[in-house]
Image (cartoon, rainbow over all chains, first blue to last red):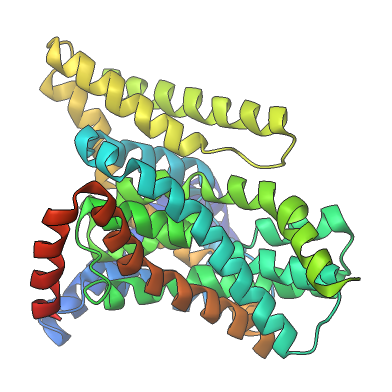
Length: 255
Length: 136
């Protein structure tokens, strides 16, 4: 019987994905209205549900892709895959006001550079506190705090050990997940309620999945502004990590 | 027709992502250089031009709006496929580094916001920050 069900879920995996996600959304908006009387946004609860399910999926399957590693639910991976995600993000751009973007243009670029730099410095400082002293490990872990893509790209380029690479990926994952969860809660304290600060937020945080989910849970209207700057972040990190930032770390540590 | 909107969205996405990929290859980094951002700018520019000329009708716009509206569910699905287990078992150093980066980023949002406004217009900013401090 299970095999028969599995056959259906394999053939219609994307449909299963939409059905499951729809149910999660419905449950989350219901919880939001009943338990928090709308104070915590339904999409924030839904994203949190997604992360909790990913954690459970990780425990059950031992894999790296959360709920997607469970055979019955592999379709969630298609719905939440890079292709549909980027397609939907670009679609949100249709509501963008060009004047708002122009106003935030220069500060947006500044945010991008400062975002990469600040995350890197934070990662390096923590790595130092935990006893790392060599430039290669420090740079790789710092780059991981930029995003979980910049970390391994940088580490591979400068020859980091696989343990350090794993640490740097984990640091980037923590960042991305924390941005998803925390953004709706800190939004009002950091003034994240207009296109301008959304552009800055995207540039400073960078992690595309974190920014995409964090803004979706805060206010979907802000999504395109944040995602626009965040789109350039990983590239900026990959560019700076193995070059300027590594050289700077070499100069500082002397090894 | 709805498909016209979807096609416009698809063409903009493909063009943007392709340009981003080419840029990445040209600079020699293994990442897409702002593909999604370029695609969005394309959609904004082309979309508004077509709208002004009256080429895009309501039905075509619905094709774009559908994918825009399905954005939050797609993000929930994306959350469900993250390696949360890996992140939480990555050890105290990885967790601390991730938290530190996020806290610093959050803290910089209001700082940069103020800087940018100051460079725009000094007088206006003074009034604004005064108002802001009252709010805080």
